[in-house]
Image 1 (cartoon, one colour):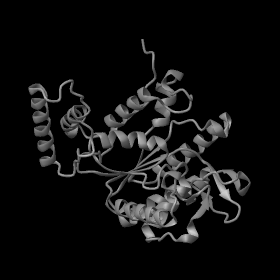
Image 2: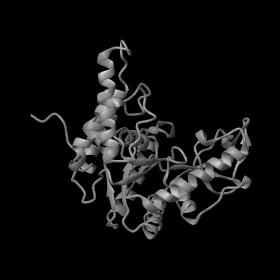
Image 3: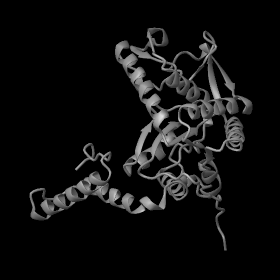
Image 4: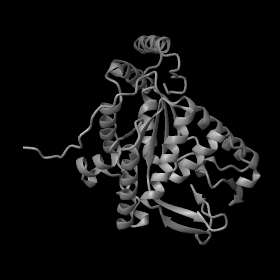
Length: 320
């Protein structure tokens, strides 16, 4: 007896291994997948401008990074004792405008480098609802608690989203012909927009992604939204806010992603990395004991082996 539907998945040709360079952009779910990749020591760069919820903000930053744009004081504003930028998440905001501009331009430089070198770009779309600045008529990535009367809330059409995604694919492919795009729609429910409005938003995103994927050879779709809705269709897989997938759900979707996108050839290496990561989290009852010294020596040998094989791996910022 089958008690669960399964979303069919097929392995793509260009899978991810330890030679891959992976840029992740988009909603907070991209950080969930990015965290798993980072844990296993893949070469990743994750949301240089912080969480980005909709396709226009992602497109705008990608185009600025490609053209070598430089942020100036005209691009930022002061509010609530901090400097902000409508292009970036609030975690880049700073007390000093110089610090903010340095962060913005550093993030843009990093994004430009990764766009040119990435083997895979994973883009997670969260919503098709956007806020338009009435003063500039531009779509913002983050409102930074600016009074809502300054903005007009609008739902992007399928055509709007499709144009943005095509622009991303075309512009990046022009500077990086071998890049592979992985699009996914976030399973996070944007219920502040409304229950019906959230479903309409997700439908627009899904329709647009499938239109782009159907017309591009270097694009694929990973159904994280569908897995959450059809395989994990129970509130026990959400956090207390009933909006975000919980740790069990994230682990489940990660396993699906890994089975589809991560090459079988790196499975043993991933296991070795996980052993080291778990070892670094170990807390000894007696740090001065002979047993603990042997444990540390064994762990150091494992790290040395991995770093010899994969020099980019870095365990220095892990705990012990």
